[in-house]
Length: 584
Ligand SMILES: C=C(OP(=O)(O)O)C(=O)O
View 1 (cartoon, rainbow, N blue to C red):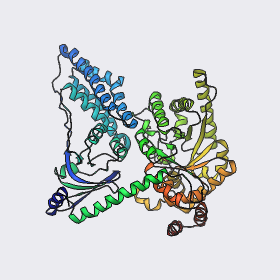
View 2: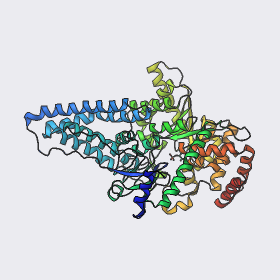
View 3: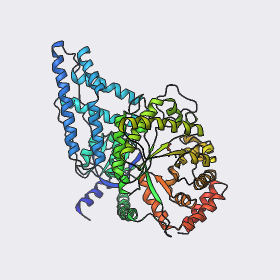
View 4: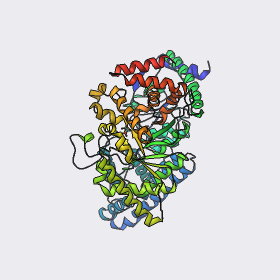
């Protein structure tokens, strides 16, 4: 045993082991001493300025904008990862925002606020808007806080160099993407945050940089003292403080095993996409952010089967600017070259509730997806223009996916709007033909039941099992109280999938699955057995799914599908899955 290990074990003998729980944000296990990080919140002047000082404060503000941009650009230059560069670009765009400049200048000129207080006030209004949002948008607050603090620090001449002990486990209340990047350069072993969700930029970056991370560990930064020994379990979302020697030994073994598994996964990802009897399949990725591209490439996904675009909804009541949208689509297409990218139109509503005016009693059955877009024609056309213009530059690679279609009439209208937008584009750019495929999400049971009629109207079908299950079983997918009733393995779901697969064959239209069911390795085998050989899933699930698909023959998968098709209860399906695994 080396001296360092001996000291760690000796230190922890006298203390009690405590387990703290949070959410698993980036997988992996790390062991080490903690370093506490507390961001210094800049103080701002409380005194109003005189009219004579206005010009000076305006120039201070101007100088801060310029310097902040320069600092971020320098940080960008040190990064090789394109996704991280893009993320920092978003901070530059925030600084370039004319609305921000105008509002801060008004505070200085009209209300005699000093520049730092004016910045704090204007950013405060943005943050209040974020606070009223849910989940994803709320998690973006940290990016705004980071830009605000950077500007104020520059005005007040504060130095914001953050130093942390190399190799330690970083404990913080919450980190901004900039901080994750800066700390990653100091080789931290892992991250624990009190706040932040698994979809925050910090979490996405940690995943992309493969830094084991646990978020949402309440009071971690106040309850863990500096230089404690901890084990961070990024797979389970746990932090073990002062682990006993027995726990340390157990985790060391787990870490060694994880390293072996990682090299096996890398081998699997590099192998061809074929079953044991040579049938080929295609595995694609579901993503929402550019930052996920590194993971997409590392698992060698053959493109994007579902690009969620709701994150483009950056402001309180307004979808992303067309230019920003195009930049986003370009980045995804560049990052996945030469594979296809399936861009789903904004699927606002339901669980992705944005401010749509009045609250609805049944948002999942209400004004969401294409229903909303057909009413909000300007938004719809704005997104279509951005997608079609992108498709012109990447011929044959863009697929347009329409969410929440529930009638054939909707498809007719969608096609009209696409045609109008194409004509508008043709007149503007001299383009004669846009090579783009049109598909619909099959998530409404009536559409699944009449899939052949829908398939005839489009180029492809993509089954969204997450919503299809909730609509078919009448079980809200997000309601914890009835979560026991929600199962994508339900035989009725399999019957629907089988029907859609057959409809695809009858009409020669490809059918894929992009819901969570595709991330379940045995279910993926069953889907192949039903004739669906294009699956899209969260990048992290791809290696395990691929391992299962490569290990079995198509014949075995067909037998599994036949058994599942005869199942009456969820337990019957589970039994068939267990038997299938037992035969490995
Ligand atoms: C992939 C799906 O869409 P969502 O983004 O709603 O999960 C689905 O419903 O299966």
